Length: 420
Image 1 (tube, rainbow, N blue to C red):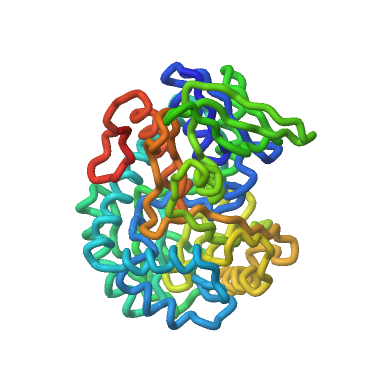
Image 2 (cartoon, one colour):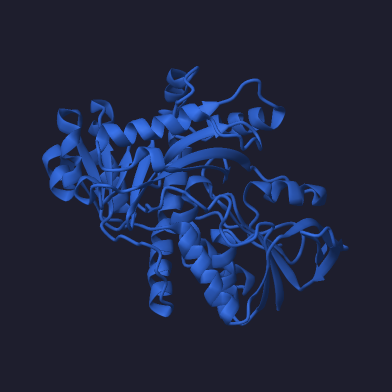
């Protein structure tokens, strides 16, 4: 089949990889001048299968109340809010029940485990240099109540077939000596041994080059403006290029991987996607003292901040801000990331030379991405991955290709959108 993919972020490029391997003729449309320059550009760098628990969980409402009024809060709900934000927020609260949290956690864990195996297989098939580290992810606990839950989390991961162990503060420092500066504040950790880290932008960019060399067509600086149908079936993608020239691409099928803009594109077709743009922040810092900067990717469970070593750079990322499609930076949130870095790894990086970034992540209330068919025949989805786009990318792309081919994805318990 001839298939058009809308979006060349992680999900779009990986979808192109799996669909091309099935023998399809692929064209990828991307409004930016290259691959992975939006949501996927400067994320936290973690392939974190050990963190499947969604933001929506029984503890979330109380945490959000405690964070109200703080500009540097891990989750910031901007006021006044438009109706779409209130609707998404109410759906988020509905997902905070124990039963829904358990169901969503298990679905994410199964997809994440499959995704990691797909990533490993992809690396065996094609050489990609993207500053990868395979030392796991170490979740750090500075709050006694959160650390008490660590054994329960480890048990949940074990039931999902993942490898994680609770470690003492001393063992955390043995795993990552750069944590010695944390002193007595660090209570312990949870070591996700299956996890990895790496530069998602480099990965997507280099995979896109491999795909282009094998015949996949990439149309950069080209925006998909509408989707045309004939009856109830997909027919065309209407486009405009950087010079304002319009046109239409005909194909047998299309896949929407347009991140937070996916809903806007599909709304005229009567498809309402439960996606809201959630702004995330990161700073990428040159490393001055290699021994003082961590090699193991870290997650601060209290502050919801992650950091990953990317070659001679340290990427520190986190926070979620709900403020519509606004992309203006909030200096208080970037400053919080810089403070965290200096508190935990004093003198390790050049704080003045850091590259700051913020981008919109396509978040669903339950953290489950939307993968599968739409009500329009021949129109497919691979979007809504929120903070887990890097973790779930390869598994999502492989599952999408399975669904397009009429195969059942080998993932139990995930609510794929099936045709018909």
